[in-house]
Length: 404
Picture 1 (tube, rainbow, N blue to C red):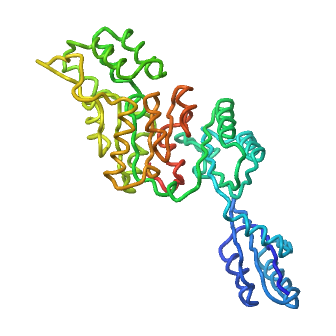
Picture 2 (cartoon, rainbow, N blue to C red):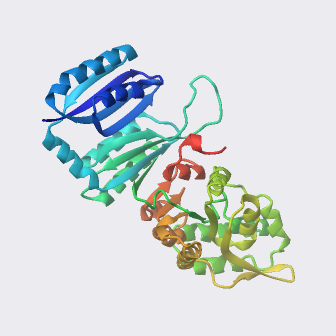
């Protein structure tokens, strides 16, 4: 008769425990069907699902395991598993998996409670929970680091859109970010990241900075704000704003370029992605003059933006070539994926404005970054509480695997 037993070992962790226990099992010819181990604050939890043929082996095996556990200073619990229970467990392995990522400035019990409750309501079971962020000292002061926990969940929700809406409500109420992604091969093989520039990769809208220096800041800012909220056609709003800059001395461009404030986490994110061979692109409704400056500063591979028209050292109030609006951004993203020989599912796109939604929708991972409510609602993922380097967590990086 075949025996199936779940062995649950707990106690103080030290090297050699797993080796010793599996050594006892090996001596009895036991097969391991599943294994899982986690250590939290030097306390071990080890699970072994094992099987063997022959009821007569059971008592001697338990005796040997308990003797070894006593030597090791750990506790053992044995749970028999019926054959039909095991087959049911095997049968669910093909069910879809998703990754839920919780991002916050600090991790609170209510964050976990609310997310776990939402998952349960929608029929999803949590398989594993892992902390991706680093350990924090309660005594030593140091740079503030974010908190990140990743849930691996299994099952098919009856209404994925409703679950996403619930996560958005939790995010707004508790001041956290919650991302939901399908756990597939593309998630672990992203190769290109495309950024909007203004208010995404940098903290300002460049056209507003130019306008402020020309004395038309209020007029241009009003049009910019409306465009980002999706209230105006982007092409028309850009033409109107540029017309207000006609006659601006081109030397002002350099003055603005020297003072571009990078967004929190931008340098850390890009340096880590470049180290792993990612290609980095700017696809922006801003201007190539400033995109090229960022290219030099950050090592960006591609820059696609609007080209300011300059004549006799003055801005003409127009751009040369097609305007980079939402439709063109999507076209450029497709072309970039084709050039790199990858699937669009391997692309990450990041932006804050309504004109970014087409490319966010195309990318395998589209992220609305510190965006307006309308943009957040239209994107599958959003980050509103942390810097750009939080994207590293969304693609599965652990704190210890990153630089800086």
